[in-house]
Image 1 (cartoon, helix red, strand yellow):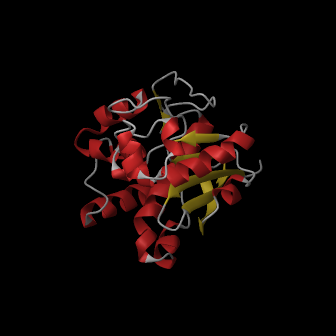
Image 2 (cartoon, rainbow, N blue to C red; image 1 turned 90 degrees about the vertical axis):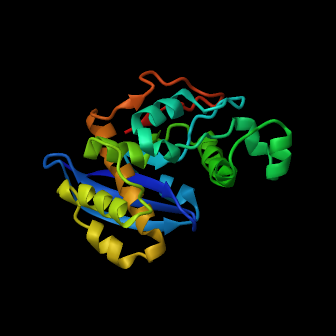
Length: 231
């Protein structure tokens, strides 16, 4: 049986960090993984992958809703003490703004963190307007780590939290190149790498039909994109 290409994608300071895995379905493990930092998301989505899993909101509501989409609210309930890692995404009309002050004046009360992600959301939505058949799913690394650990983990920004995430991924026995990529990538991107690997794990679960999605039947936005999180 031929290997199946799966890709996990995390947004990072330079652009996007993608981990492309060659999955061996008969063994249930990866033959190897390639990690790549790119500025152009389209370059990654051009890959002939069966599943892409990305840590970025896909479906966006028309109007601002406190607390965000249903999937965001459900994710916070699951994460408990780590609920702060789920930010409220903007409504689709926020993508028209380039000034945070103008956006707030228009009644769209999103955080600065959410506003800073608007360029990446715009890039993603423009790509999906032209490639509606791309097998792309929204995921969140903290939900993947929750599934793996059985409980919320300490913040990834602490040494303990980083080490626990690495140990969980390495302990799966699925990945061949995680340690090498951690060694070779600039230190700035080490947490992003673990998040991208968590997204790759989500892609594997989606492929195998074992992923959970919240809500169970995600509504769709004006572009037809699902407002749900797979993990």
